[in-house]
Image (cartoon, rainbow, N blue to C red; front, side, top):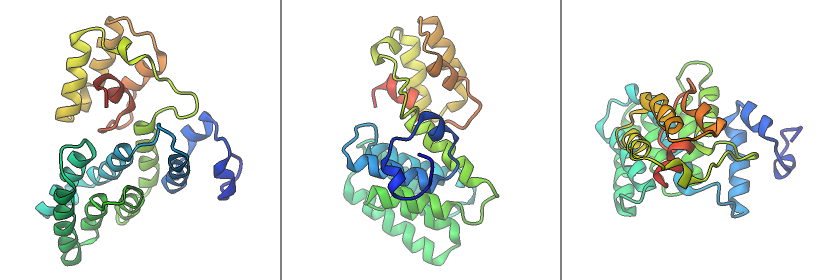
Length: 223
């Protein structure tokens, strides 16, 4: 991909290009096209968790309880732990708060919208409003965090990443408790278990933000 025109997005993108992109809108456009080609790397779950991760970045600005509840419900819905009716109820409550509140209430309302492509695009777009310059770069990092190495997949055999109870336990705790500060500990546990996949280990020790949907944690916990 050498240009940012629509047609070029249908062409093969290189791993280096994907990892260097800082435009989340462009990245989502590409992911959506690949999604519609029925590419199994792009799932509703991961797209929705990206929308929620954008909201989590402005969590301190979400003063209305219904807004935080919308994000939490959307996350549970992504993992099959909330029903469509629960998502709709949470979305409606967040929209009510959005019209009576500030811009920060809109991202959660979008994150809980049923159409996952709209959820991802609009939650990201509205979350950038009023935030610090450079939020688009952080959102691009979130997409790289969640979708990993799309074009030169570093998908180590999942069974090889579950060799010990320690690995599975640490990964499960990280996911359930959002204990992403423990990612280096997961990397250490993987090394002790014999994992030598440089991409996996480097990701665990990366200083970039880690969120639910992290491609390494997903491999281990089987999501």
